[in-house]
Image (cartoon, rainbow over all chains, first blue to last red; front, side, top):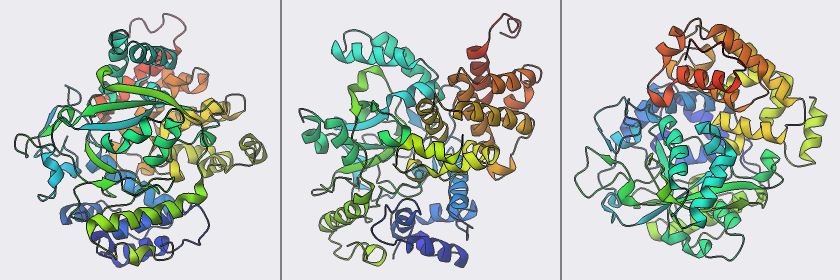
Length: 342
Length: 162
């Protein structure tokens, strides 16, 4: 295991290793955080300053249980990664030297990260739950739904003012954090499905949080799909013109997730774990600073109806690992952590 | 709400562990959720208060909303004036986030009369506390509290405050 977080204080190493090896096979793998712990052992994208910061925050210790680990991880995120905005709200340019507003993620970028120089016209995709936006923004869900329907139905000619007003309240409350997005090009086949594209998109992006059964949402979960160009991503003062802070996600960029698997260092992007197991070729994902959502980025809306198949998670991860071994040239990637499922 | 009724609602599907914890120890479970110190399993990547609001919709016809309202009212009274909650690991940042979440819950749940009343009794009289733990628009407990009170106001008694 070559991830920096696979070493460190002995009690941490013992804790994370014991969680990572608790997988009994045939289960869901997420109830006991086996897969999340494996990601911590595996992640080569965590640079030394960040590993040190995680240790300093008190998150890399021998926790009594997973809940205590989640609490310590949240404290690390709240103090180092999810950053508050200034009076102007979400910035379009972030001062990388200002650790009050710049997430640690973007203060320590691997200089060899080749995706930084992406074409500004490339499209990125982000999926949000409609009710989550309404709840977070404290706006009426019906108004948001109606504005979105009108905007999409009129191809952007109507409803934009209302929608921007509602999303403006979201923008005002949003913090600056690493935001996950995927490459539109890699998802085009799914978006062109005549029906069921929402379920397929949820699975392709590994969005386990969007499971109707968890929320007793018998009518399904309504989603909004935002599509924006790389050029809409906030820039970073430490990067020269024509580059954007688009980097492979690491375990330290968000809350632990079972349907996440870090990519080997040296790959341009991360890759989503496809819950359906259709991982070849792997679809690209990156993190970038929070993009201020606007009506013009709203592209599709729909409803996720299919329940998640938790039993397929281990298989999906295994297929994912096999698929990223090829482009990385690392035939033994994750052999130390995931041999039991490969 | 008892465990059997929670399981009935899920009709044999897996029940999120937090709901069972809340059923046993509502005050502890809610405080852990607000301060980010809870294990939401595969829902972990979501904002905790947003997860909770999703459950509120799903459980609208059960006793869950009343239980949650009572627990939140207790949390508001217990936590008022503490700028670095122990349950937040002593983090002022997470304490601010917890108050933003509490305000969001009260604002979004129109039936949360007890917690709205608790906030109403404490907040307009002493605005300093929430203002001092705020960190800009994205972590604005005072703004969240005003939004919560605005959603619940039934008369013009707050007119002078606006």
